[in-house]
Length: 157
Ligand SMILES: CC(C)(COP(=O)(O)OP(=O)(O)OC[C@H]1O[C@@H](n2cnc3c(N)ncnc32)[C@H](O)[C@@H]1OP(=O)(O)O)[C@@H](O)C(=O)NCCC(=O)NCCS
Image (spheres, rainbow, N blue to C red):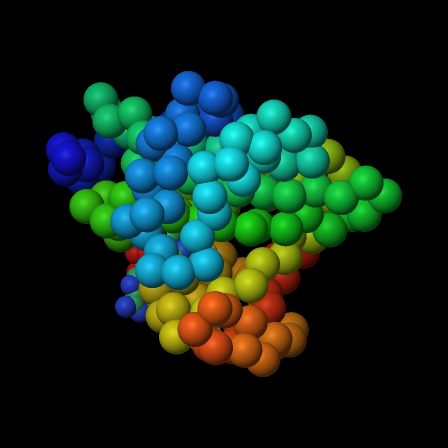
């Protein structure tokens, strides 16, 4: 895999079915368990209640992804998954994906973004708190290995 550029601006685009292989590959290297399957990604790519956004920078086309869910008659959107390729982390890609997710949720009339995160995921928690997400609850034994989840919310302007 190529290493990501250190300072090229991050671009965001909507994923389509041609991105399926890259999405599944990223899922496998970013998560040890609780992974989304290829069939789930295929379904979400075709669904109006999901939005998958991808980040690229410089000549690197696929550096990270965010999966966003909407529900009919709900003004809460859910960030279901966020991942940056390991060699591209710490360069603002996660933050750019979350900003794009917030913009997409606003366009759908949502008033807040919510997500769950493993209580031992320091990098993700650090990013969410830096971006103004507020912890408002938890789920015990939420993940397959028994780890608890923190629940976070970002109110959208
Ligand atoms: C969480 C993740 C998406 C962040 O992506 P990223 O592209 O590196 O994010 P950014 O570069 O925008 O921000 C990195 C931020 O992570 C935080 N961070 C990174 N390592 C950290 C650590 N060890 N402790 C605390 N915070 C940390 C910091 O807030 C950092 O911000 P800074 O650069 O201002 O210090 C990435 O680490 C990842 O893909 N992890 C594996 C999948 C995952 O855990 N996803 C989230 C749960 S669904």
